[in-house]
Length: 388
Figure 1: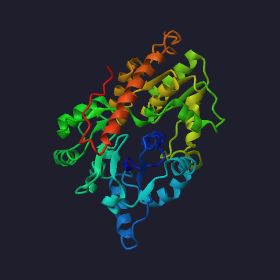
Figure 2: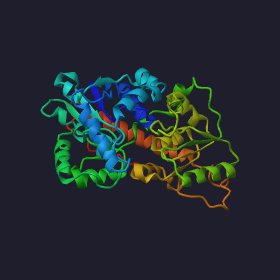
Figure 3: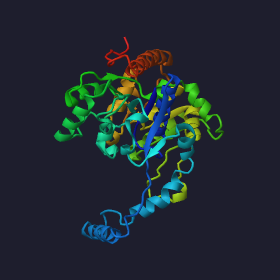
Figure 4: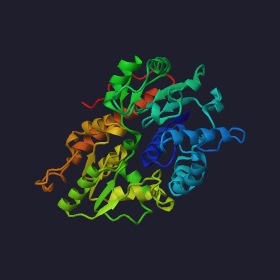
């Protein structure tokens, strides 16, 4: 079956790229022809006739807001900077994901694909996508195609839709053949918010592929050094203190693989996002990991690396809580460390056999969801995929 994947824009985010690749690979392994759709991210300055008005307006707003208004020449800066910061990571997109790039979903027609899969990541979080209606496949209305979500995420368990948007998305979701979400809380949210009681909880697509798959991708990188690997999306003094404490207590050298491509206080040459191979290799060779990233946690589990995850409320805690809860690892979530605890008695100790047993069950049931959802002879999927 020719299947299109509708996901968040592909840019410099490691987790976002990896989940798109994993879902495409999973569908291909199941015998489908999978294509990841991406919207063209080219940023062009305003039209010549419009530019003076735009720039003057922004300048005035900056004056009125004492320099905290919109950036005047934002498009020019992004057009200059993005090729530089994405030069290394973009190779993974072009070589492994090979997306079909569109100016908008309106370019598509019914004959292009047999099915559309929405997922994964925070595709149902309005602030993370240009038009949330696209993530509910509004552009396919009236087409004879299969529609489903795989591990779609709201990112949070707080309501971020207004009443009108809830009504619109609820109506669109009623036209899906099958619905699955990435967080346990998402099942409840679909039921209570979107009047959909068919949603089931499945694995993030990155977890559907074995660790050996990612090791093979990272094999070409020889820079990994082991020790304490840190991957922090949003810096803070509290996180820095935890990292310093863990490094001291476990007597490990720190190797930071965090990237901040949007931080304009950093020289442009230092904002280039390293290739996917080096990022995966750092996790594969780590002795311990401290992160505030969902997909950072996912890699720790796949590679059997002891870890701490620091809460990141701004990006949504529901996804971290759900992931850790699946494997009974809630205690790996920390917001500080006891100065009298040397960590060596428990920090390195995780029941990996037990984790793999649960993971295997989830993989089996998540795959069953996809198989049924894409079966043209099946009206929909309605199975309990919670492990027994």
